[in-house]
Amino acid sequence: MPLKLHRYLQQGGELGLWHIEEPEAYFLERMQLTEVEKQQLSPIQGHRRLEWLAGRWLLHIMSGRDIRGACLKDEYGKPYLENSAFDISISHSRELAAVMAAPRPVGIDIQKIVSKIERIAHKFMRTEEMDSLQSPSRIAHLHVYWGAKEALYKAYGRKKLEFKEHILIQPFEFDPNGGTVEGRVTYGDFRASYQLGYEIIDAEFVLAYGKEQNRK
Image 1 (cartoon, rainbow, N blue to C red):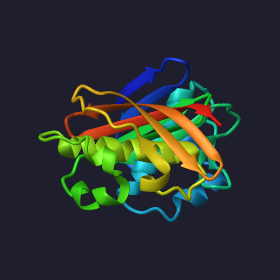
Image 2 (cartoon, one colour):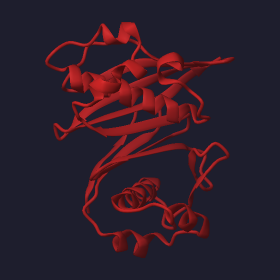
Image 3 (cartoon, rainbow, N blue to C red):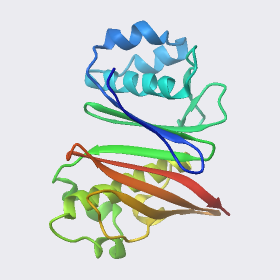
């Protein structure tokens, strides 16, 4: 079983990683998708179907349930686990699927490290965030910022956020062994702070995840 990681977090919650090696049939035979889930999966093509299935199978494994609960979407498109009080977030990148769940709003992101992120950095990085970047860790550091902002976008869960304007990451020094950072979402009257973690997976991926701490 390619369950790569399953970790319980301080102050409640858990996260997991699944290394995708199975064919589509492996998941379909075990999951018994609901009609709504089948409709969600239907338009998805290629390897993205495997990523979608693996993420939901990992969610089930982490839930500890004998009978799988459906993974549905709310009015904003944010996924939730049927009959669960936990907030959830799902991400996938190529052969890895990631899930986070906790009693408070959460977000998770897994990304393959690629140099082309430099081309779009100006679209999501604030000046003070850019100033914290240093060689030779610049590319990985950029991915942490991107992943952290993606995680907070998912935790907020209501779309419309601009990464550069509404999602702020406290500038930090990159640690190749992983670390924690602080973030904020400010949008209209909404104000919330988040504790985030990041780590490098297999020297090729950045995993970033966050949980809401306070909301005003």
